[in-house]
Image (cartoon, rainbow, N blue to C red; front, side, top):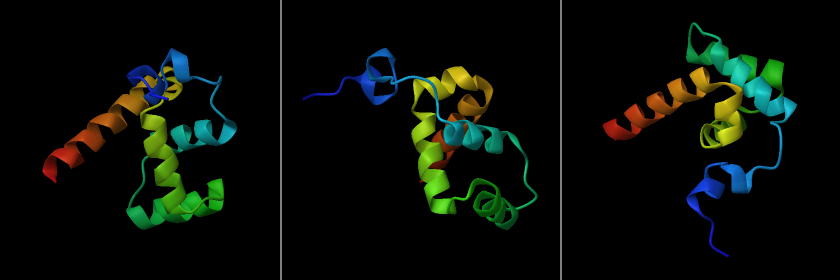
Length: 90
């Protein structure tokens, strides 16, 4: 079964409803500023109960989810620009 572009990126055909509490918490977490990477990773473990790897995997999936874009367009678009800039440097 082929997946069209809308389904792949959380468009109308692939949506299942609202974002989960964990997904909303990840977006809220990304709105904060952090003094350094070690502080952020420790906070991910303590406040969200996730490993940093799992956190970043979920975050990257959210950046391609249309529901996340509608829930927090400023944060999602900022993070998409950061991700694209990193890809361009590789």
